[in-house]
Length: 287
Image (tube, rainbow, N blue to C red; front, side, top):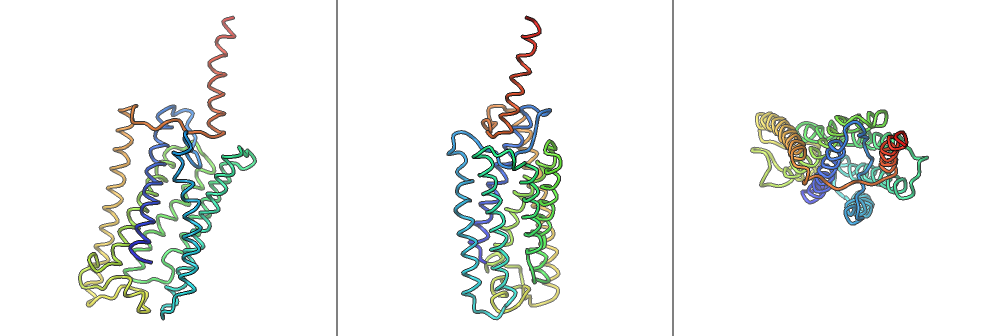
């Protein structure tokens, strides 16, 4: 793992979270009473869904890359070595989730219910929670522990949406969590460099490469200060993401021109047909 790995994860999670947040807000503001969450917000033209098809290619490459790093690693830290294999498994689960979503939406397979897709998504985040930061202790364990906590809450949101897809609040929180995971992944990745390493402590990559499962600090006081600083930064990340999300909701609510275009999918087609029927019924009654 390195800063480049964490930055790539930041780009994926942040853009995915922002896109989902904007789309779910737009769908909710369009008609709150008919709102239903979507496993993926497909848009027309198909070029707007380029992020999904890009992930379909990037994720298996990333998964096999982690397997290669696991096989090629020759250091003394066995825990660090097996972390590559664990991350490969997590990425593979999310890749399978994307394949299921694409198959369902492309062929309008009503047999694959959205609730089942959300349930499998909950399983994916649950696997991430179990695998995240495995074997790490102390300061490094706390940093990756926050990512595990976010994955656990994401799993809960997916299971809630599997039961009740009309709950906008859960969808809103889920989208915010994806953005927050992205920003925190980047924050952790910065600690792999000497420039952003905590005062009195070595960078995280050096410690892991030397067979240690924690960040080495000169004094215990430096480690305690670093832990308190990271907890404070995590709270700052939460506050900033929530302010940005509510600000985005207010902006889209005030300015209709900034809202995204109509999303597509079999479920929305059903809602649209119901709307047509509701408009034609009064005309039949008048006649």
